[in-house]
Length: 268
Ligand SMILES: Nc1ncnc2c1ncn2[C@@H]1O[C@H](COP(=O)(O)OP(=O)(O)OP(=O)(O)O)[C@@H](O)[C@H]1O
Ligand SMILES: [Mg+2]
Image (cartoon, rainbow, N blue to C red; front, side):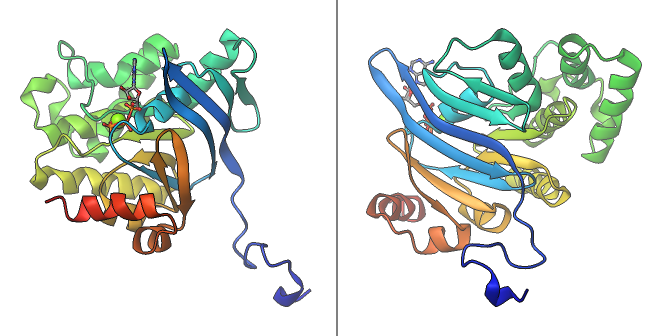
């Protein structure tokens, strides 16, 4: 069979379409009378990176929090891998929620490290307490990960003794130590001084190259263009448009996206 025999929407020969890892269908969420997510559909293939962009209050963090089971949606489904599907239309089963939480890990805008614990304690807490892994194994893995991000010598430091960039790298190591299938980043660099942003973005880019599946809320458009395999523009609790980052960020089809990108590029 030659490539011309393939249907128009087939993946190019030699580049198999990645198997979906994350599937979200019809996700809805209100806080009281405030309808924050109208009906969100997302698909992220294994090893793919989805960047979420959109104005303040549009629902980006709420999407991530639902994916991580930190927030319960009012309706819709979330599947991670073939085995775990959480259907919010029916009463979610505790076992499914635990499985969902176990498959993803979140990196927060403000790092969310425990201030009274050391760097190492912050990283091993989840693997030991939540996942019940042996302390020696969790510690060895944590130290290897800290070494990888250049922070092995900070293992006994407390978060207040670290720069924002160092704290965020610990935040990323803490997420990796959970051995998740899906990494969720909520504006991981927006609390950082400009000169510290690069280190964190470089680390996230390395993780993308290694094949981690990620959903990243970010306003770093250059980063999204280079690292994301897809970008979605969220506004008013819906996905207004999504597509190839190079295409969408340069030439959006929707006026709302165009206005948002313009405001981001020309804030004054
Ligand atoms: N726990 C909560 N209780 C009540 N309202 C909430 C809660 N969390 C979020 N909201 C509301 O949901 C809406 C969406 O918030 P969300 O944090 O998801 O937006 P966002 O797109 O992440 O915004 P930003 O870019 O400012 O971080 C907002 O109107 C917010 O006030
Ligand atoms: Mg947010």
